[in-house]
Image (cartoon, helix red, strand yellow):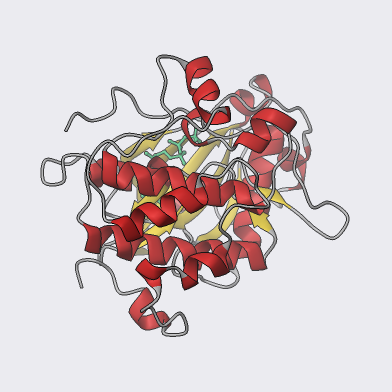
Amino acid sequence: LPAPPFKAQTMARPSNNNSVLSNTVPSKVTPQDFVFIQELGHGSYSTVYKATMKNNPRQFYAIKVCSKTHIIKEKKIKYVTIEKNALTLLSQFKHPGIVNLHYTFHDQSNLYFVLDYIPNGEVFHFLYSQKNNGVLPDNICKKFVIQLIDSLDFLRRNKIVHRDLKPENLLLNDQGRVLITDFGAASALNEDRDQCESFVGTSDYVSPELLLHNKCSYPADLWALGCIIYQFKQGAPPFRGANEMGTFENIINLKYQHKKPINPDIQEIIDGLLVLDPTKRMCINDLKRCKWLRDIDWNNKQLIWRGIWE
Ligand code: ATP
């Protein structure tokens, strides 16, 4: 199976509210407290390093360093603020499926997010590894899907929409558990505001309601989940066109096919999630009741969160 020719890129997210630069409380922590071991990768406004603290070299962290000049120049302040606020809120609960933020600090040049280091890379790389070659076996796919459903349930209870779910934003820990990362496109909803409006996300996974009405809510993450499950079984995202416009057209026309034979119980979930009308799309409770997942005891968190290598 050919890997997709390119990684899905998060779409541009312009903004110019500048609160995060002033309201990150300067703390006693400085970059000099850490040993930066290696670069893990970089995103549109940050570079992530593996690091340890000088006074505790056994504990590894992933430190996301965001250049203040770059954030201002690229008008990304709103998105760094969202990422910080969402991760701060969620990290209080230490949910097993969300990358834990220990704290943030800043100096004159940069903002620093001190995150748990997740050692086994992106699900994207696992999917396109030599072993998997673009298709996950049903049992591994099921494990990932169960964990993602539990994490999305948790996000919903905390009124957060991630809005940029994709295999590149899912990390694998040492036991083979899936953790959601990169909350830079997230949105916090509440009683007064039950929809988000800005055009964010990644074209392959963007929901039709965002494309057509510039509005989305929790079902947008379930649409992305449908795209991801399809990709786990078919080797490429369902709507990818020759270019971004082609992809958008495929999405709004719901143009996708199950090219390879697929377990009908998995197909039922994909087809139930890839529904144009967000009110008719499968919700978390529908997913929990469907045939493929009917045997899962959703209260048994220990079992749900057992990794694929345990
Ligand atoms: P963008 O922010 O533009 O969407 P991105 O998701 O690639 O891009 P980051 O979230 O900054 O950007 O991550 C950059 C890289 O660092 C990713 O490739 C990811 O694999 C790696 N990374 C991020 N967080 C961690 C972590 N907690 N542990 C291990 N690796 C991480």
